[in-house]
Length: 315
Image (cartoon, rainbow, N blue to C red; front, side):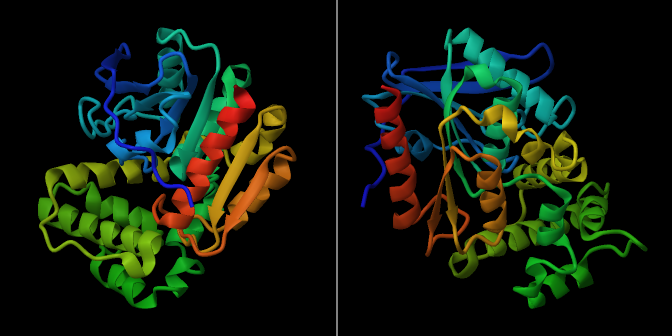
């Protein structure tokens, strides 16, 4: 099995000025003459990490990481104004132009994979290839699975009951609306209590048996991260219903590898299967023991192998 490449440091970092209050953190590592590849983190809210450089062979890839607006090292942290999917796509295109990259490989998981697909649909001529993990299509059905009455709540009924009992009553309101009501409340104690519930729910669904709830108090940073995730969710990720699948014909010439864990409860495997039905050229790799997170021997082996394979194809 393949493992992550050795740790490396960036050879260049900068902040992309966006013409707004946002400044987007960008870093470059690996080989500046190599195959350009941009890593797109999930969330939306999480930010990049040093290990994200390590999916790529640093001798063969020009590795680009960006912290999306309001995330990671981007400034101001947690800012929601001027923070939409369309803004992120424009930021990506500005980065590509600034770095004088003609085409690049898109590498993203979960929300990062959705962002990769949306970018490729807007700018197909700028995309060399895609590696997508844990497919998230940002459909209403995906949110219903995660926060609805007939979804993953049936796997974790005791935690679901805790949400029901501890979030504000909102007659006729969905669980998403109840979370927003609490997390965006001026009552900081209520907001942080709801953010803790969100983190517990998200963590349990994503990590399963590996989840360990933090006993630390919810920080202001965590509250801002949860607000950002809810900001995107309550606005349907700023796209039309079923937009990603509907626009897949634009992507049929782009080499694509889709990797999905069979045990992914955050983004059930149906999404990856439907995406590959819409992308006949894509290779669909199902990992029998993996879940949602980009960790574990099986998932890391698949992602590193996919990047190595694309490097040979694109060389």
